[in-house]
Image (cartoon, rainbow, N blue to C red; front, side, top):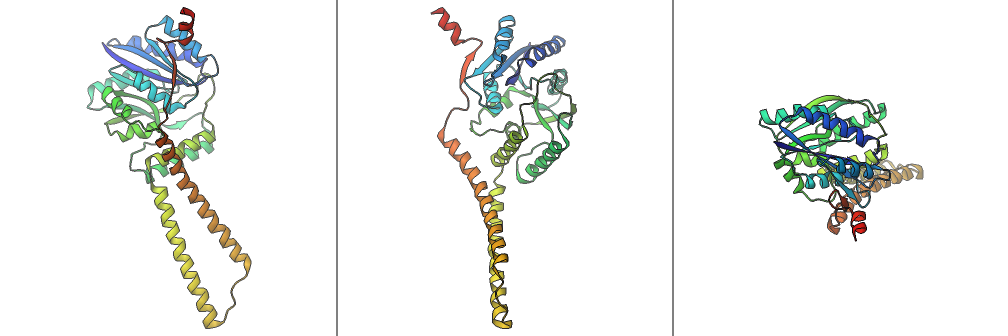
Length: 319
């Protein structure tokens, strides 16, 4: 029997967890040659998500869970799940069922029949996104495709099924600032994509606000491209050339034609404009410096407080 580990990061998903469990177990009943290892990762939830995980783990030995000491973010949850997984193949899914479990048999069949290492899902449309969010999402993929040497597939979801070899390659990259879509692409294993239309969430609301997505996009660009630094240098040189040409023009006009030097309003506008450009690129440089600072501190990416085999409260009761 082939074991497939399914990793499910959760943050305040008490309503979605039981529904997801029912759907995923239905799918695996149809996969006669496969066994399921279902790994929930509790990313510091404030609701009853952890209680739901504990209950399922008691009822079903195929269910395992990790619980963080606080909220470390989805990227940390994905890494923890990948490290904890013991399956021959590993899937990463969202608990809200926008990653439909019924695609897993098809994905598994493709891995067996074709010489590939990973099958992922990508979407061209997302019913939950507003027009403005769709516009910015489209812009993001166009920008990162231009500035990054690592291929970023437009509309790619985290939902994918991969071989153990690919999983181990992703785990080997222990960088603190993580962008999993980029890391999955960076390892370079053969991946095929299935296009689909993302369904609406069954329960709950998305935890990703516009600001969080914007920050996530900036982190992705910084993590997989140094183009913003090159661009800042290029624009700095360009402004120096423009300033030099303007100085020559003013000197020639004053000496040859006797034109007086322009007044302060134009000068003030130029100073404000150039200062704004400088501050913007200081911010770009600062973003790279902050990432370097976080990497050099070598802090743990996550801290596990509890698993299905190690519950601190249960140990205290036994004592």
